[in-house]
Image: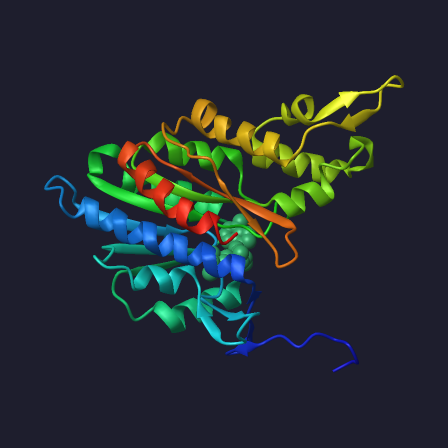
Length: 286
Ligand SMILES: C[S@@+](CC[C@H](N)C(=O)[O-])C[C@H]1O[C@@H](n2cnc3c(N)ncnc32)[C@H](O)[C@@H]1O
């Protein structure tokens, strides 16, 4: 190993992510909501089953930057939820992570591990089993690293909303977007970064929201994170069609730098009430 080269923790030769306290808080929020979700739905005689979908599942295990201990990721978190999910779908693009997920979670008969791009897998293999008339209900976690590679597409968010059976948690990768696309002068962003954000946002109306033309016709940034957050919240309601979208929680790094917004969206008012309570508790820590 070269001097200063970072050594990553491995399980079965798979590189694990080192996660900060903000990711541990995210996992705690998911767990709290998932328990309320299954608890409420298990009282409904019409409900045939509760499905958990982790569209960016990850390796299943992380290392805590704070304690250096192993931390179960969102897929293992879902296995432990009580009352239990009836079906757990884990999707990841990375073949090695898929193999590790099989080792960590594959023996549970509720688990289905699906390799591939979640934008396609959700549409082809998951959505058809979660139609309104299926009487199944789902909780889908959309937790990308950023908007590059094969990122989450707006059309996928819209397809989930159209089902009317699925609640979502969505990581809006603010740091990546601010660093690469929302530059102080838009001309300084690469075309590829603008295209990537358009696909995530579902259009280019963010340009009018966040930029103003100066005397020479250059687009200068005038919008801030709060403006972006409330515009995306509104989009999830009015364009995607989720009826209930509370204000997102802003996750910050240990130096207070903004990392991402965690959004929740649902068609059920009770779901929003539960999440508002959970966000309120955790907002104090972020
Ligand atoms: C932030 S990690 C997920 C962490 C996980 N949700 C947790 O809390 O334990 C993002 C994962 O998404 C995967 N990924 C990236 N693009 C993807 C795509 N288009 N479809 C499915 N998985 C993808 C990466 O391989 C990575 O494992």
